[in-house]
Image 1 (cartoon, rainbow, N blue to C red):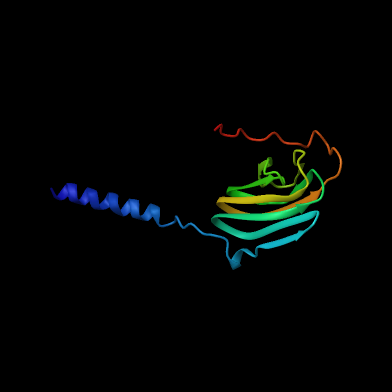
Image 2 (spheres, one colour):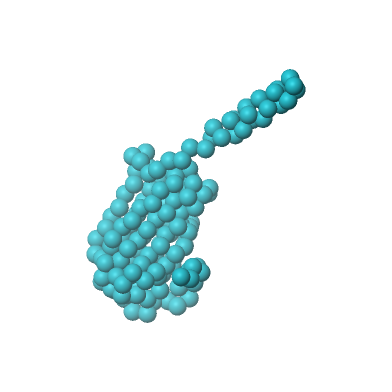
Length: 151
């Protein structure tokens, strides 16, 4: 009986120690979140991320039907996903925040676009800029959209 109780206590202590490091955080003042949002340009920055789980939604005026996206992020742990929908609500772009990635959205409807940043246990920094892009853009820069669930 003593052996079983002792084994149970050791297992409980080990499980408790393993769980102590799991602290879910949301974006706060220590992350120096900065949003520069003007018609035609949007820049989102957050730094000192440490296991951040959060979501940021931004409405942005894009007078053109496409946007160039510059990623200057460094997220060595976890993930930050950037999604962009056009004025009609159509998903045009969905890609993890990357380091030194220049890309562009699919073509969409000009107007008020919706940009979402989703943080999943992210550590590091995020720096993503969107700029309105006239014309057809570069077809080699348009990323494929991830599979979307069917209704």
